[in-house]
Image (cartoon, rainbow, N blue to C red; front, side):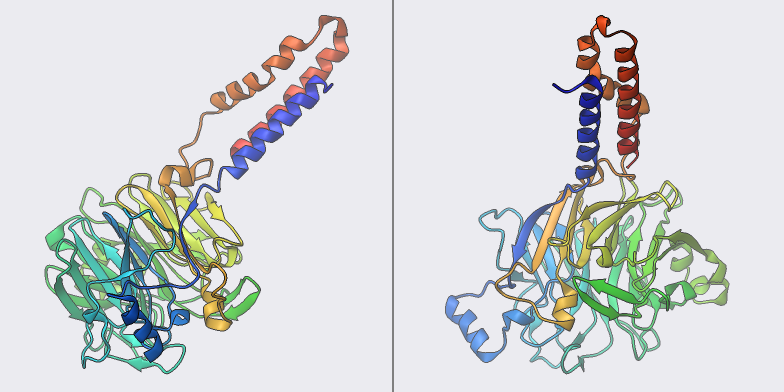
Length: 457
């Protein structure tokens, strides 16, 4: 029969393990071996495959967004044979975890036979509170084969109630560079008629700001947008490579009293996080002048090998979620605290190989896309295995028992521990004398230390 101190130790250890395990609260909502699309008929689908218009092995999901019952997915045209580069699935359809996708807004919009195609190769989309879908289209296809440029990058805005195209803004000369590659987007939408989009250029590091009201854009330059030459090494699932990508991850805070927000950002090839007030970026005169230099802030470093990809912010909790490709993980940081107080909400060498996008929807659900991009680019994906996943959880479940959660009071922890060892107190016999008392005191102290450590994890 176990002694009192052994029982207390075992209970404390079990609680400690439970706290650590509680950090992996995401579940797989969707998964695919290969992506597929909803054609009008099986014959039409087969004809597309036979003609090379649809090559399933060449379609890889990259970005995601959620609006009401639709989950949008971007499928950039890294290689040919991708018939639609933006599509969606119906969240109300729970009949399968491997749904075929419906092209958005239509099949015609994705045709490359037109001289000026509507959609070429978007990487990121963003749905705003005003019922609009903002689509950042690089207009570059075949970047892993024969690269073709269809024109400067463009910003498309759709009405999500009718799926009609509301506006198309092609970036003017001077706002794109020879090596430009626009791959991320944030939208400030507290005022529907005075919204702003922020477009990250990771190829020729810079940020392009677009004003919905004024229908114009301007380019912002800052050395914080550039990659760190010491943070370009990546090692993911046995594949090692080097990238020198600039500004990439973008996340906006909720509006402050003055109507402006904080834009948090980082280059992909970097372990640093930075921020700037959008009052600076929205002022075209200031944003395009040298006076902008001192308006940007250094928040800190995530640590070695913690290069981050896409990120988003939950406005209610103020928590930023960010992809950690080198770690096969998703991290979090509560913006009201020190940047040193970061944590992991999910980590898996199976389900989270290359997290490519992270979003929080208006129901405060966290969504994460993982797509094994490193294998798609530098090796190959096997159609017999699950290659792409979308994971989800409520924000509260995701941050539960992490440094990003609301701190729990220590008396509550001590109270829980007291309940665990209460049985041992009652079972201690007075006849055991001083040795029993000593053993119990030791077990209580040891168990308390272990539980306290687990609480701090």
